[in-house]
Image 1 (cartoon, rainbow, N blue to C red):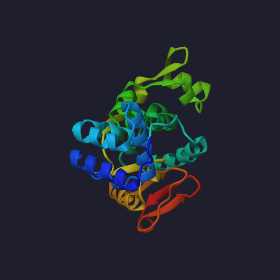
Image 2 (cartoon, rainbow, N blue to C red; image 1 turned 90 degrees about the horizontal axis):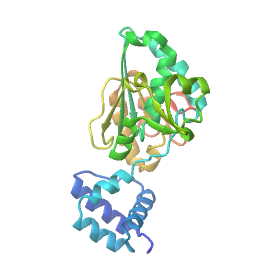
Image 3 (tube, one colour; image 1 turned 135 degrees about the horizontal axis):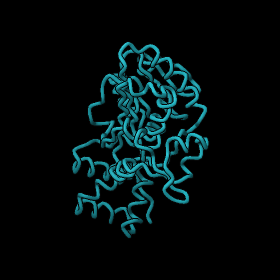
Image 4 (cartoon, rainbow, N blue to C red; image 1 turned 45 degrees about the vertical axis):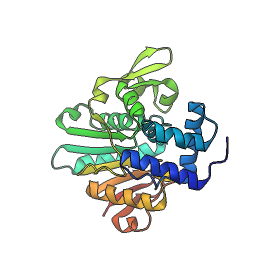
Length: 269
């Protein structure tokens, strides 16, 4: 396969943008190049030129390439120590609530491991009192296949390795030798939706936004744009949780203050 030149990658971005009416120029070229290589192999093509011609003749390929830009590698309670920090923070958020309403957004939710982890965390904090609260966890992604998988809530034991045996038995149903299904009470809190955090309006009045290990694939300008959207979406004092290699920078430093720098947790100013 020929080397993917940056000018050709930008041409693919432009074609997809025209077809879908959206701007993907902010995705890092190296990241997009890897996804294009995967699509070329999947289609049995040999060159980038062939792929560009295929894309122009088959507009539906734009959807497949967009879906491939979604990051689908995750697990329940990824970085367990971060969730220990979050448990204490959510206890404080809940204690300060005058109205028993919680709104949380898992942006770039992949196959659902993160939003279901949030649901389990809230069940653990609230116990039987959870029925007293109106809780909505908005779980969004651009990958339709990932969202369909998430809605089923079926996982291999490998993605559940961070759960204790007691949590596994409490919140999952074993349906095969190495397969588990999320219980209905965990699913009940989560609403899955296809949503593009770059171009679609943000969800509003959020108590917390999770966007972990997504921004690293965006250009700096696009990262700043998304951080401004998250600031708009959060209520005053709401929290933003980023990935281990991500940080609030630029104008975002005026919008967020670190709550736990190591865990990449920030509070809206």
